[in-house]
Image 1 (cartoon, helix red, strand yellow):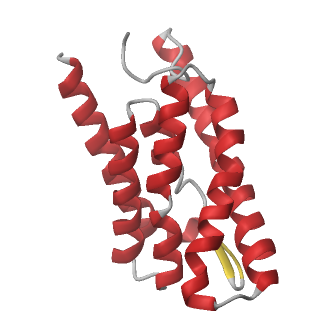
Image 2 (cartoon, one colour; image 1 turned 60 degrees about the vertical axis):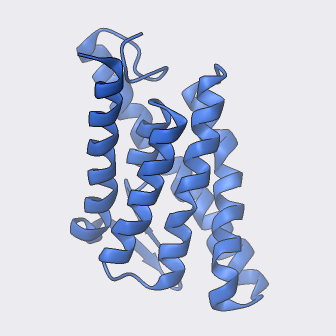
Length: 171
């Protein structure tokens, strides 16, 4: 199969997952009011980083659309839209040879800061809410989903007899 076609198909699958997860898997949401996190919502973003920067951006757009269509409040949709930037940064780092595990760690504070900034128009300058609840909560959620992604990638790597934590596509 053509590499461009493989990238397109996998990107479409990950976009679909990024839309479906918030709509159909709300039961995976952890709610510690006013914070909420949907477990596995970042997995498509992490997987798309292993395809290309363009794939990561498109999956990030899908994530924002998924949270919008699921009827979540606008601050959560705004936070989900930050997956566009986080995915892009992660994909660029992977393209430069950074390991998947390091990308998860490097992008965690970026993710937390971006999500904290995204809620300011909705909540104002409530420092505790922005820094502790959103930023720290987003970073913990990011790391948890990074760990889920890593376990899935390692399991699939064993089954496919190649390291998917470097690239999902064949080299």
